[in-house]
Length: 263
Image: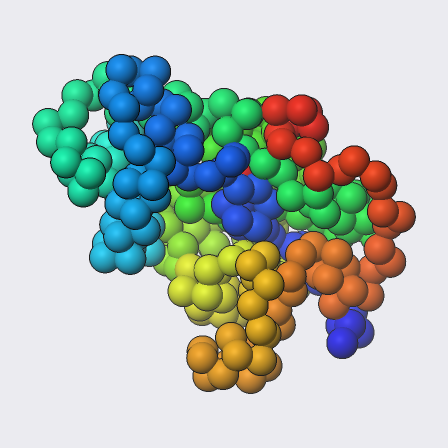
């Protein structure tokens, strides 16, 4: 069901909302390690990443931290070392970790979902202001620029640059202040219930959960005991929710960032 009024501002998460690792997180990890001379199987890395993210959801930690490039590096380094320890790689050097991070910093490591550009353009045409609120490393803003996404947004609020992570209210407040908008006039779209939905609601921002994995919305609402939660499968469905006309479908839109120029 479409809303009766458009929000003044729509904020977007980045990873698994606008972009995803290409061809996968494990594959990019492996590429960085290979360039440093370390051969770890993609299957083992995939398992280790899954285990680490399930056992240690550090990106949901609400403890404030120092918003510096060095602190961002230390936080991601600690995560990478834990992942590598799970595949039997202990005492990995900083240079190897830098190689992983270098692999993730490339445009070719990210795929922009094909609905993103046309949907953002449709929202812009409807005079909806837009911004980013993302739990991301220090280089997040540069990556968003490299992927040709930044031109759609008035502000890029990235956790590493503000010292708070979603669902902490501090990151949402920073984004609201950057655009001078009241939370009642804002919406936030993201793929994490814990980070995006919970965090937005704490601030009085309307949340929308995006599930690009094709789950059953009714089951998600039941699992979360959240019967009124708006859930969309992509940004075209977000346009439907907002009552904004979908743009014409353009052939050949589904391309990796490296070829679409431009998470």
